[in-house]
Image (cartoon, rainbow, N blue to C red; front, side, top):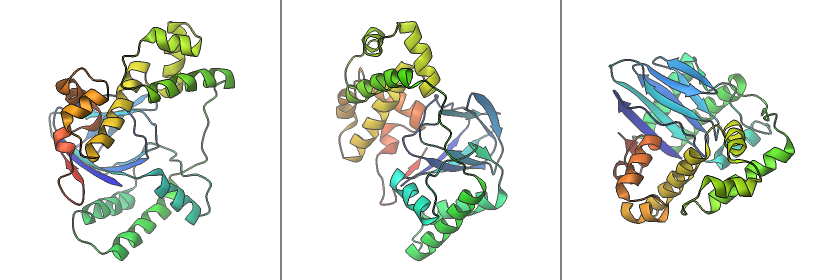
Length: 260
């Protein structure tokens, strides 16, 4: 698990997604976010429930400061919780909900990780929270209505990008892999993934860079390894997606707190 705690005034995130589910709370002020093809205004106390791969983009709604806290849990954690409650999958019904008691519990739990709370206390609080989530804010997984033939083409493109993100990939390269015209590929890819191919490529490059930073590689090394032109190019895209610079993201403590 990773914890994120950010406070902003004018900063706007790029449209992006996370490879693992994210649970968050608007801690102060009011923020807006694009998600599921709509713009949402999220007041203080709003609970963020983002499934893995869900495209979103937080931004301000006024000149006043706004801030939020987020938990990023590994898939294995959700699998364990689902099995504990005899569920096949853990899928959030809505990306943003108003649930005052859940919001308070999440804030308390997030803050507990900033202290030396006992394992029993944290685990007990987590269990109560996930029971509430399962009861009120999850549903059966809804599969997009995409033909198997076209889905297979987009999967080939994604697999290629996942394996070759460090290379200079062109749209023609991807169109040949998909056996689609460049225009058809752009339209189909955006429909299936929620991002155009170039934004998806930046996303997986940043994901790879994040893991390399955790392993102790320098920012310059990571920029080169992930296919960015230089360190400043990597830093700019990293902050647009993660909300912090690579230097701010580097582990500073045993709790691995990220603060902007």
